[in-house]
Amino acid sequence: MEQYIDRYVDYLRNVKKSSENTVASYRRDLIKFYRYFDEKGITRIDDINETYITSYVLEMEKQGMSMATVSRNIASIKSFYAYLMRERIVNEDPTENIKPPKIVKKVPETLTISEVNKLLDQPTNKTPKEIRDKAMLELLYATGIRVTELVTLKLTDVNIKLGFIECHDGDRVRTVPVAEVAQRALSRYITEVRDDMSGGSDYLFFNCKGAPMTRQGFWKIIKYYAAKAGIDKDITPHMIRHSFASHMLGNGADIKSVQEMLGHVDIATTQIYLTNKQSKLKEEYAKAYPRA
Image (tube, rainbow, N blue to C red; front, top):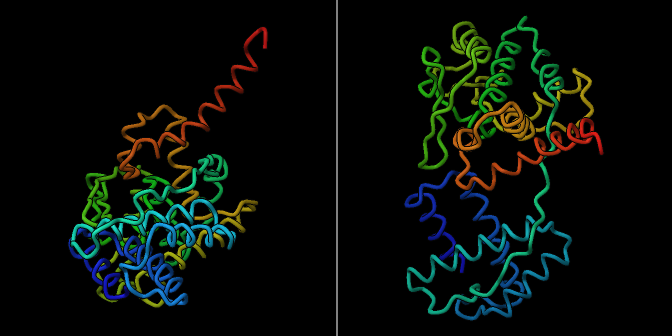
């Protein structure tokens, strides 16, 4: 089975042009799937049937995996078998009747506008590192881009004069506007700091050793400034993305525009942020309605 997984991964990378994160996620799920059956002595792809796959799903649930993780694994396996069917490697799809568990979508946790302001005000711009940190934090909140998109930005993706950046997600490219406060922070970083940090690389952001910034490295930066700001929340880069979406919609932004900025394929993904707005409306209604 391993050879087919390798071929499928190549297909994702070279034909579908999926992002490296997506490719890594699918590969991880499928290697786990392969090892489960390998340990049971089932190594031929043709020997795996619907009953076996159902038992694998039950095993994941038994291990205490979240419904979201189980659903993602099922999606990876179903996509793998769709590829095998297209390539005529298998004649039947044993995943056809396998359904992912229903997930109740939670409203993403966000920061208040006050908390965002506190966080973004922490870098004092007294050192090159703080100038870089300020630019990264301001840009993340101003655009709502994913942390992977932030750390993989190239200098050529930035157009400060027009106030836009270009984000790359696999073979998809989208243009996102940048607020003036973030433009100023970014301009100062590029003008005063970036060249000394970059070592000649095309990337936009770097760590203090001159290597491109990583997701983990930026996560530590956020944790540091959150603690410094006294914000008692488990802040992640994705929470700042959630906050951007929630605050934009709360201030009257058009949902289709927010969907486009976030890079959501399905508007239903963006609609979950409306829950925060609706909760606020209910609170205001309860306060003002004379018979409430």
